[in-house]
Length: 257
Image 1 (cartoon, one colour):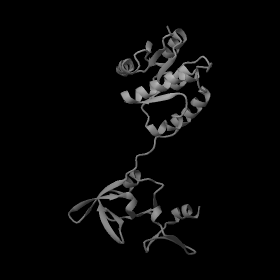
Image 2 (cartoon, helix red, strand yellow; image 1 turned 135 degrees about the vertical axis):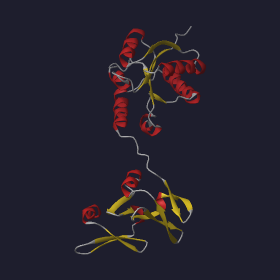
Image 3 (cartoon, helix red, strand yellow; image 1 turned 45 degrees about the horizontal axis):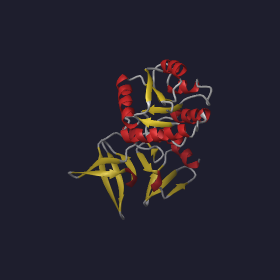
Image 4 (tube, helix red, strand yellow; image 1 turned 180 degrees about the horizontal axis):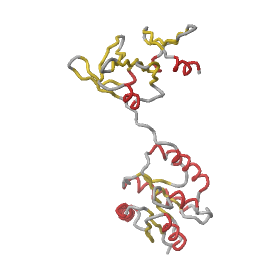
């Protein structure tokens, strides 16, 4: 009779520990959950005592978190296979998805968990352990990066009595008027102007700064729509669709660089 495969679950949320244990019983009935931990310190104690084959390890836990637990497993050849459980967006974990360690993105789905268990069984069957130092380096690098900003892709603006949904990529430039903003938009061969009742300062926090540059106190341009930059000895302006827009002295250095 083959030796049972054992695992522990470390997560500071009791409901998530229970839910993961129940799902594992469905997708991998032969797996024996030999222990449950609510923080990193408990996880290390259980790993030392029970020597599990697999650890399902939450990344964010109070005190000693999942990364700290993994870094303390200083004997990779004897360490269990780690499956990180994370609430980070999938883009934050793509960089280490191809490594031997797997990850589960919260909320965990049964299909994803089944795929994870299949990968674990293959590695255990082939005795194919992993390079923990390489994994930890890549994982730490990813988690230290700020989350990707969720910039606006669409704006609701008015024209007459109608409300229109404007794709930000269509905007040529934005001009601040008295109590509203004018969005000048390219539609086919024509330009249309829509009104947005919002402050320019607030809108700038919602737009991608790599795409939209404030070139003047009252003017923001879509960089991709700039046709050319025209300079004289004392002034500078950008040309967008035959419209010349002044660049303030404070912003001129951005174009020179």
